[in-house]
Image 1 (spheres, rainbow, N blue to C red):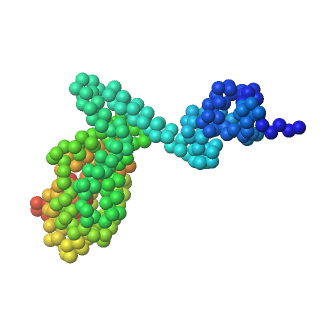
Image 2: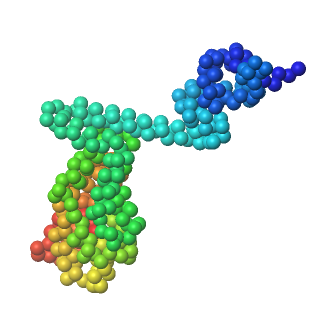
Image 3: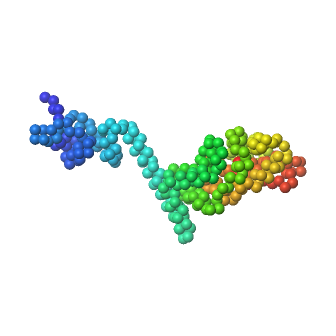
Length: 318
């Protein structure tokens, strides 16, 4: 005769799980009671064996009881549990890598510098909050008239997410970004220049083209020069101002970009830190703007060299 229910003692003997543990599982709702004996003792159905096996396997992975309950009761699937636990493990690993990188950065110096690094690195140990601090700052700084796609792109570049696998240098650089934006003088560097651009999708589309061409030239190690990148840069500004691309306009534009707040050395340092924090994955806009500005000057040069008073300077592409 086939047995339909089992006592908690029988389950313990057959599974190797102590009675006390099975009783805890039962009280937690993991092992539903199928029936009661004449004496009021708990009896469990055949599905209890499979549940016990599943619970033991998940507990071996240190899965919390509350999470296991969601799976065995059908509230979530095993696949969802695995995905969720994997995400938690990855987050924990990132936290541990940050802790390791922080300690290595502190171990690499002494005295006052160690104290300085300790102060700034402590600001970025809560990674999501550290990222929000950067994004909130740049959302407040960049022009509200900028097309959303362009704004999102600039925010992603200026406020990168914390490195997932940082070394001492990238962790320290990420912390230094927060030091720069917290300085009262490091503010509103883009507004005046942006407002002169007469924001519009067409303008930014050509600026993005110029940036892409410049990035390709920099990747190839090419020196600044006249050509497609400079022409796209000039065309964007000429169209925005309803001007023609003439020598006089190029001279005017060179003067404008040379005077822009994008040449601020603090911003140049910021882009350099972004490059270190992202290990070069983000285009250094200061370097790109310097390349374009020098190329613009060369495009205005005659046989004797650059036009009088024109020289290459550093800055940030519009």
